[in-house]
Length: 398
Ligand SMILES: Cc1cc2nc3c(=O)[nH]c(=O)nc-3n(C[C@H](O)[C@H](O)[C@H](O)COP(=O)(O)OP(=O)(O)OC[C@H]3O[C@@H](n4cnc5c(N)ncnc54)[C@H](O)[C@@H]3O)c2cc1C
Image 1 (cartoon, rainbow, N blue to C red):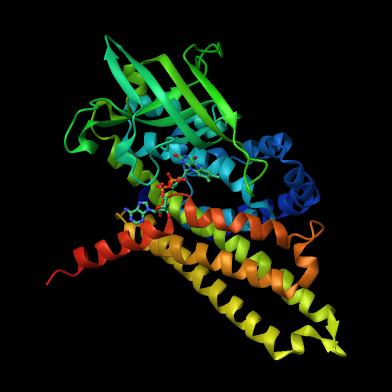
Image 2: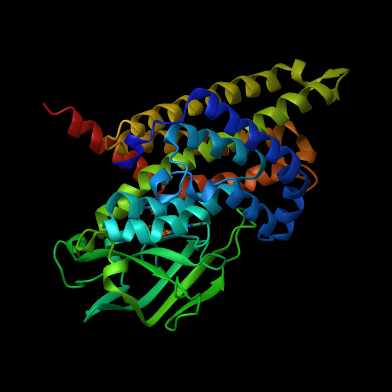
């Protein structure tokens, strides 16, 4: 696994990078995040900055033009950015999950072809798994890819795909053998693009359906893909060059996605806590700051302890990922606990802020709207607990 080989960044390199990102957040993101979020505008300028900083290649090996960061460094970056505006992290993380699938499972030719283009952000995209009738039950997908000579012909529809509209590509989970039993054995992963990657010319048979309106996670596009006899080159598109591996690629790719969601959740929780600690010292009732009322102290105590526990679970999962092991359980625990923490801490922050917490002038209402998605994306929290339990039994047979 590539991540295990990428320990080339020294502590001082890491500090420098985190410092640079922190300055960028303060100077460029903080002043515009609120407005872009409320207007649900895709942040074109910030995406250009993220390209320049190399974030679209954060987890791609340096030999293919990426930064080759460890999951540990990467998750720190994600948390920092999510503390200011969580949506931004989805723009590069979903893209990196597509890239990770090529990096971990692609043929040498596919890596050489796709990864340098992904690393610069010249071609951006995400992960196309979910369909109108299949989310958690991924094996129920109906999008098909039929082999026709040296091409695949794709038909079907995907929904809820992050970066579907502003992006150019997708790692697309399809059925290459719709009748196969077990169902996963008929599933494959394709890299599909809306345009010819070399000429930029739009390709027929692939289009976006509607842009989906959401409670939070604004600024980033969530959209549909519709495929009608869409054709792609089999050698470049079929990840790994063999059919039947798509389900494992999708679930393997989700490990880093889960660490990312956990890291984003920590960002949301940290921000909600920080705002609450500050607000509780300035807001006075009954003649004293509310931080001196025991009811508020109990909330702050809970929020701080949970946030710190979530941080440690993310660090633990990222460290395990960096050893190269399969880490479903660690990533599942981090994702589950950190996302529930984000929801709880954002809710408590709203209560501490009283009426102001409900106001669009404060960041709290945004954190409150953004947090619940963390419990749904990259495998719902119901599924995370089932995964944790299965791993517990597997690792501790009697
Ligand atoms: C803003 C947003 C962005 C997204 N981005 C992407 C993306 O980029 N790419 C992508 O492919 N998808 C994306 N998704 C889709 C997301 O991954 C799915 O919504 C999620 O996997 C749940 O699937 P579902 O919505 O079909 O719910 P369902 O699978 O229908 O689940 C409904 C409920 O049943 C529970 N449930 C289901 N099966 C079981 C079971 N076996 N045991 C116990 N409980 C169960 C679930 O936990 C949930 O509570 C996104 C979704 C949102 C909202």
